[in-house]
Image (cartoon, rainbow over all chains, first blue to last red; front, top):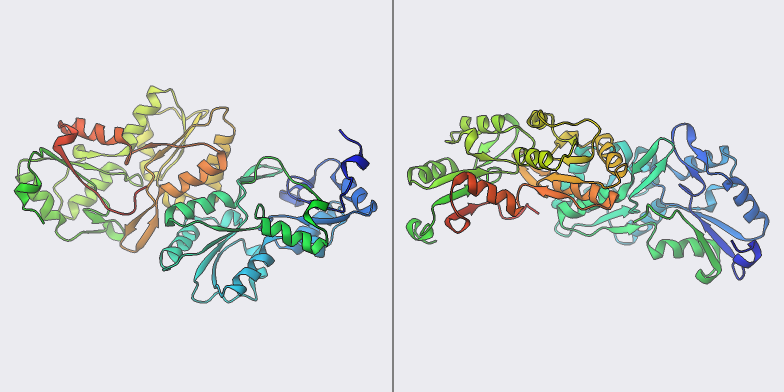
Length: 219
Length: 219
């Protein structure tokens, strides 16, 4: 492995994924991945700009940051780029009123959004809320629209919890795509716009940034 | 529309779909589609061979036939080709032991199948049983196999109940395909082998048969 200095030549900022990179989530707040608490601290000491870029859409940023801090990570809410705020911007720009198929934990992130008389569906990692009834309701909303719009917060295949692998939002996005004959718009990784917005918040150009992400599970 | 005699020139047998063609299922046993009870009776009086070919996998053939008879249809269990028996033959031929993600109603159709230590997943229209927990369990079984096999009883997008459109198994099949990176084997329509087995049971050749199926919802 190349030396620290050599690997970071020309780099001014680092985007770090969270789940599966810094920690594995799960019961009791999850557990850090070996070496990751110290790695974040070292990056910050080095003077590099650091930003956390996650598709986490099952819990609010506040709760996520709280869990990370309890595990020893030096991170604040303002340093996290996550899909819900990006989705809210998109909804407002396009006058979209979503039917939300999301975890209760993140519903509050959409408090400022008009959800009456929906003209689109927003789907996120809803976990246990991915019941047949809830999926069918989202399906029926889409089928009732002349121009169905499906927005998905990420399209991950699965993620790892301390208890094992867990289905992520991507499969459920595919289910609705297939049933309704639509193609989802993805907000979050791997959308280039999502990374660009994280870089803008970091204040560096793409060629000056390093990204650290898990290797397998993202679509 | 061509006359009855002209339309059926050279035809010796007819395959009829059930849901969406003969009746719309739903609370209280569903309701027949206008003209369909008389159409079946007329086909049978005409001397044509008639067979019912359905992807219904949320209820047993016995219950399905009971519902149809109560609605006035002249149909017996022996006249129905449905995916579970075809799936059982396939499982036995290949030594596959399924993890079943199916409706409780059809579980009994797999009574003769060894389901210990599963080496494949069989998915059917499970309705309310498509919970996150059950989907995740099927996903974990597949991810634990060196050579994952996913068998889907049909791949319909949706079907119509008296209360509205309902998600069918196809979307959930797509979800598992995407999450696990596998391609499902479909038992049931539109698999050619499924139609061939219905024709064998009918005793006619493919060029001597007419098929009547819904136009939109099947994948």
